[in-house]
Image (cartoon, rainbow, N blue to C red; front, side, top):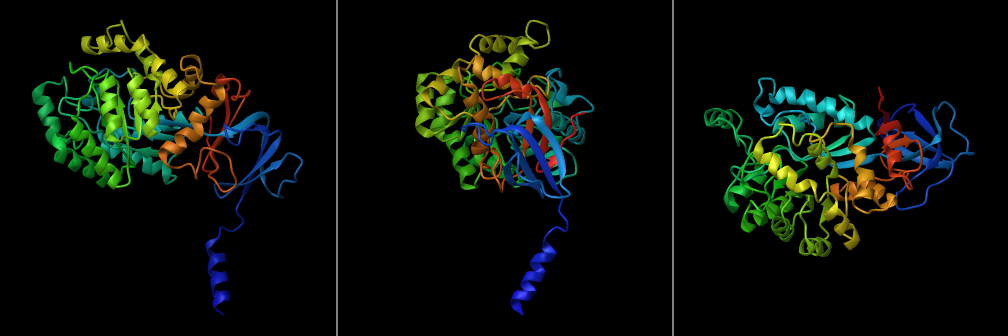
Length: 430
């Protein structure tokens, strides 16, 4: 009797007449580290891959067939460094514009998330934006209320007073004081205890990770440079607190000694890593710290430098970074540092994320295969979701794209997106 009741309960829990989607592919890259399969059919049911069969295998009756037989099908791309709530053409003071409420930022984020998915990115990591807005965008998409990629978000970025993520730097003090009262910046912190509290407050908002600005930033209007901001004790407190809560830490870091301090503190990834030197690279290799080079951020800078768009402080810092674009990535790659693709979208126009792959090959010296791995399983491993996505395997989420050409030999092939599926649901490309 018990077995009968259990069987009845299980049957009731299963979807009735679940629809199967059969995707015919000319080639299939199941894992960027492995050779591609020939012509194959990928079967998807209830948002998951249930089989990858040879093309000659029978397709289940009633299945919806997607004909990508002239394309290469591969895992959806992953960008571990995006800012969905901003636009590259925004002036530096846009955050205090009348429209830029947290509510309006949700609409911006949802729009940019869809643009990003259409560019072939089925998973992204939002590493800094409005606390409530980024959480709302993540939840709306993950709950199926709007189309877009799978999202992890850091919520509010942790910064020193006057640092890269202090949103009132350069603002009229009276306006800045009013903004601080209306929208307290929970990520701006001082001292080991204060920074531990800030981590807990961000975690309380249900963030997926912690983002800190370990050094100054190019796009903030401060004169604090690009070297270390938080003290060693503050960074150690942030990392230890985050890890104790099961959260990884991504560290924005440009200057060499700031990078060294962040890696010594135990961060999980260095974002940008612009001026990383041999000491930094060797330390990252020893500790398994990921490099996220964001080469596209410098492309965005190039498009605005010398045109009066940036303040003099930003212009000076921008010029510092342009001349060494890709050099730190090349050193990290040569040394065997783990690499994940990240782009800093929002510093350039959303939807161009995939241009990072050709840059990783051209400027970072990476092979097309290794760049593609960084854009798929590399990102999945950094985000801790490699058992869910990053490769095409029966049982994993059906996150996949189809492109013209072969990205294992030509990194620019990922710019030719012909089909996108996130969690088993197609994304309209128009």
